[in-house]
Length: 142
Image (tube, rainbow, N blue to C red):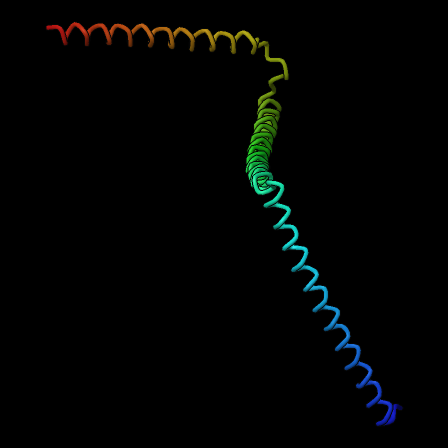
């Protein structure tokens, strides 16, 4: 067991160590302040303010791009999950109703046909828009 004198010595030593650490901390704080001032002088002297602003802007843009990429990645993951669910449902229904994997459908020709139909609709809309514009001009003239 420590005696009272030993405990007093330990306390005194700890107080001295604490005081030394506080002095060291104060010295480091002063050193940090001096370095900050020196950095500010360099920034002003060498025109680094603009470079720092550009760096900050690039950093902000990178953060925005990273967030956008994360959102797009989440969207892709969601779509992949939905595709997997549809494929599972398709497999289940094919199995349940004894439909083979190749039902004899030419999906590529169906997709092309749908695209052709869509293009025809778009062309028809453009023609109708031109006719409408012409009719409005005629109406204005009358």
